[in-house]
Length: 111
Length: 288
Image (tube, rainbow over all chains, first blue to last red):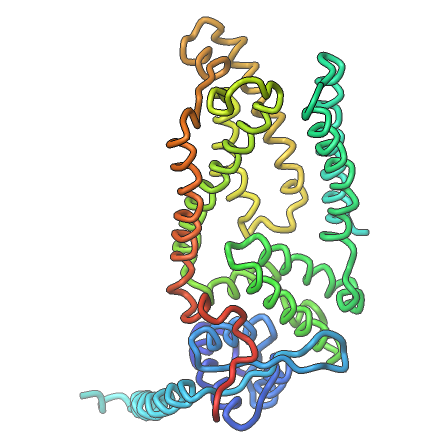
């Protein structure tokens, strides 16, 4: 399981935007979706990130009735968020390749 | 009710009793006349009503909150209090509290434990607040807020004192320097401490307003006893000054209110783009 660290928190922003691009998602559902994909995260980690992304204009929110009681807030990716997500994906692919190459280097191969 | 709720209610009751006792002492010493009778009646009424109001606002769970189990409810109360103590706009606070309530209800219904969902409610609230700007920037908001309190304290006190003798000019009413010092203590020390998110949920915090008042009186009397001949002590304890001596000064005090509100908002504005233009951020229309 992936652990909850500062590094993961940074990556979570991109992953949350990635999950929100397919469908409108509410907070608890986002925790479930991330958990199902291997992120060991809880509500305390995810909700502040959702707020931050909403404040930066990357997610918009809409209140809808919920069967369990109070209205539920659904988040959706904005056009601004879509641009940010594309930038994140490009950066992630570049970074991942670099990290993979460094970690794959054997002793004596370092230039 | 849990210990925290008892502490809130008990301290509200103690504060009400102290105000009523003070009023009783004043009434016994000098029976009021004219507008003072109405003023004292209002003060007594507010004191008596404060306890049920505190119960309704701070303790009685709302319909949706009542659905939370004890462990979830305790966490929600801490989150709500931490957010309520922040400098955010009232609408934003309500929105966050509603989101958190729904989040906790969903987690509870999903079979998660409160500990797993929100291990540290106060740290969670601080993380949320961090999404609205840097902590240092938010801390600076205490300055314009404290000055605003000071303006209201001075103008309110001057009016109350004037009601004791409406024959004199409102502008001629002096305020005790000790009282002004107490206002400064409340505005710049007590209120910021009460609003620290990290302290929310501590039982002693609810006693702090009453304790501060008692300690201030005790300290003043101690100074009078230790240094009865000190000019500074006599000035602070027995001196008085006209803080709003002229109509021009009153205009300056009143003019400071919108200015300070503007400064207070300016601290929050850069943190959340569009927050002040759009009101609540939910239900924004966005074309996909």
